[in-house]
Image (cartoon, rainbow, N blue to C red; front, side):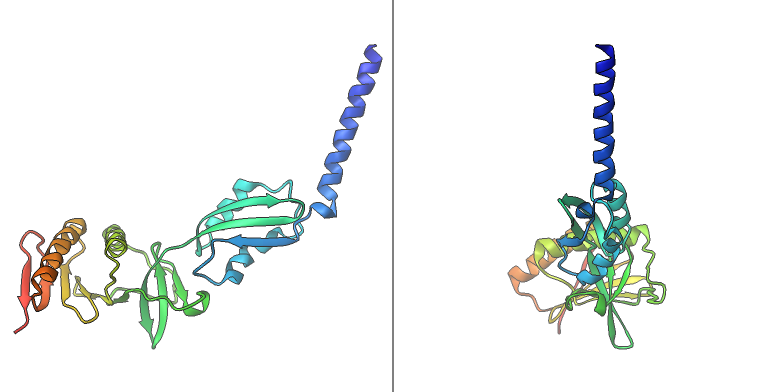
Length: 235
């Protein structure tokens, strides 16, 4: 009885090994197709280029965590998830990097995401209207802008403001460390330095609402000192 059990166990083990070897080497289980989901801003070919390394790899033995970590390190991608579609398709669901600014050099537009990565127009599917950053230290040859902590806070507050109010400044101008928002066919808003941005945007929202209600003819609002805002009317 014991010998029969040992033989049966050995047979099961051999079968499992055979199945494992077949699955590993089977051409039917090698990835032949890459599919992307969620790519709306960037050229899909650029993102596919990061996933093409997995063509002809066995779909069963790929490590999901490693793949997702590798893709997330690509500058176009904020988050990525990998899904197997048997027998031979890899599906990647992409959350793209968030573009926040444009800047202009030699009459050519470049784009900046929230992490400071730089992109050319050719890397995008189409032109996107974003605020143009002027006067900030941007070197397109470095392909990366190192935002300060205060700048990161400003970016987050600005993004929230634009989403909630469906309005974008045409220009964001840095002049001697003084920040000004310039809106198309509207008044300028002087924010001063990058300190206390949440408070400054709160005051800005209250003041602009009152201006719209009263229909004032405004030249600019100065919120450099947010608890003492200055409203300059047109003559």
